[in-house]
Length: 94
Image (cartoon, rainbow, N blue to C red):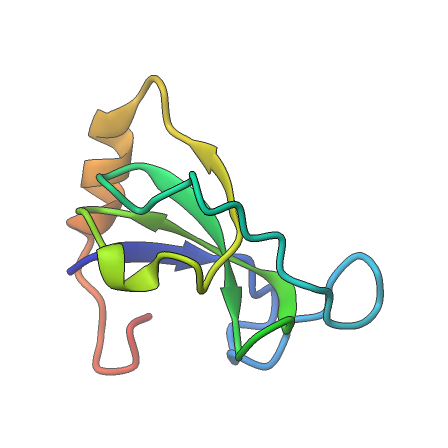
């Protein structure tokens, strides 16, 4: 397991409307890296296709570098992130 994902109010993987009403462009900053647990970033369905979904990393995920907009990092409460990552899910990751 490498991430915890949220932000889909319909729980269908299609309820991904942004606050802008449509997909929005990536904001990639090359100096920001998926170099550990607790990185907060946008889920996208391809380049410049960001919506309402987001994820938190549970481990380093360098293969995501320059593909997803990073907009935060957990500074306190990593124990909560780890507990979220330990929650059992079904075959549909719910």
